[in-house]
Image 1 (cartoon, rainbow, N blue to C red):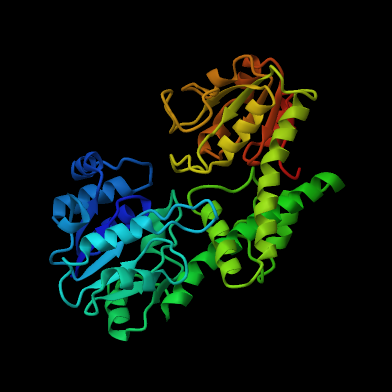
Image 2 (cartoon, one colour):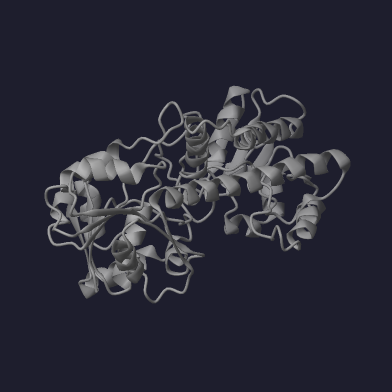
Length: 426
């Protein structure tokens, strides 16, 4: 059992702290938001993440997990302190380290001698040195231990990761942090801090590249009359490529990929390299948003002005309530710009939301949102959409047209109900 402090209770911090407590460590999680700490201390999780609420309750009841306001109140007797604070994107594409530096300054004088500070947030290459310089504590070791958590499956990703990456030039500190993960079966990559920080950005850059490649192939499939689903199935059997993340969609988004790809381009530029490939990946993704808007425009006959568009799904992916950099919202903004009237339904978004264009009307039923619609846009792959009756949808719509930007509906079924079905790459 190790005494752990976790600074920040967002997706990464709360998942990290809770899972370590679940593994038997004594964990104190800190945040500056008093209301959030009160909610967490009551056993509730203020965002959607499968299985996390159950683990938080269990760990609170066991006494292995507690929540406090302020980083300074978490580190007094910790052995390891994890920095899990935001690293938002600056105007020039680089990551903003102000939250990291502020948290570091707050705990610098309070850390016990010999403590280890771990950068868990996604930070630019060289950030370990920044934290060291801010701490001004030669008796405290700073290492990198990047996270690879996906929203919607963060608990499973933490407890069953593909790998654990630890960047440190102090072997004793690296061994100490490695030991925190005892009981988890995964390769442990121990390297220097700069390499560990680069691994995280490289992983997200490659994933974004794969997703943009699939959407580019989908565009070609539409032009030549091929079915992208069959093309990707054939591609995925190649062991050099693999079947994962070979599904087309409306474009990628969320809290990580847009920010991290732009940061990687900036890191490369600062290092003297023009990362043309990754800049192209980002451009293809931005083009994909416009392609979906174009599909919806074509589905209503050529002009969206005054046409009613029903949207299923606003979050950037299913299994989360996160609206940050959601493709759905980017597409919705594009529709508004072309004069469309929009109503939307998402199982995690309430009518009093403030996360997107004010022109979007939110309703609480996937059928009601279709009333009088000229076209239905499926933008997030929530399972419940697959079970909605196309007959019931068609009876409510002005025009039976659907643009399935996730290819998640049964195309043949919807076509049997006389829908003009348009997918991606089909």
